[in-house]
Image (cartoon, rainbow, N blue to C red; front, side, top):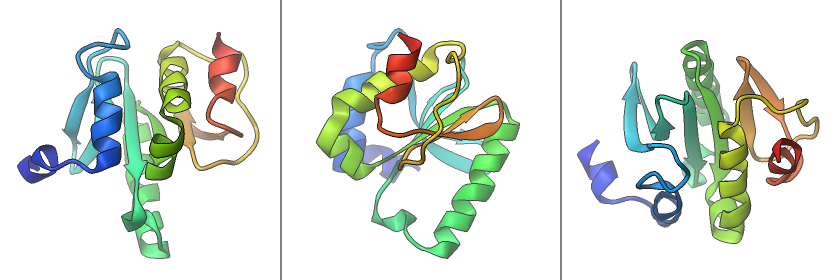
Length: 139
């Protein structure tokens, strides 16, 4: 785990610069252990996990593992935001807006379209279209 902390990916580094040191009014941890799993970023007091997916998350076996992992984490009461490295590189501002929106208690209603971001609210997967839809709903 120390090597993952010491050598983050460019996407992890960019997101960490945007959310560290209570910049969003919340304390995030990097490479945080929950049960048998290590999550990329976690705000434990708010019950929010942020996962970044790179090339290693492609393939049926990895996707199955991710689903089991997300199920366990949701059962522990966590909301999970999942972004691709491409999302971070191309639209960090929208990613941060989505994180801010997810920190609010509940959106007025869940978005309905699929995208690369899976969000767990109330223990269920809520899919959304575009990174900023949830942010717009919660403002």
